View 1 (cartoon, helix red, strand yellow):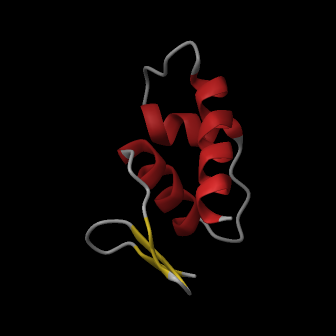
View 2 (view 1 turned 135 degrees about the horizontal axis):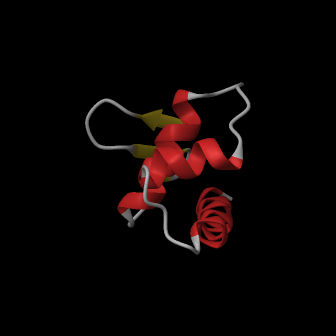
Length: 74
């Protein structure tokens, strides 16, 4: 897979482009790529994605983001 972070976040697999339709999924993937080979705790990720005012469901939404990206990139 090839990832592009300068400009729009894009993913290209061997069989062509991969669509990450939702902005939050692209933001989460970019966060993970920018911190490759580093540990990011749940609280760090929540802070990066929602800032100082995360929703009450932030942890559940984060789990859903992980699942959605895994499905998309599988």
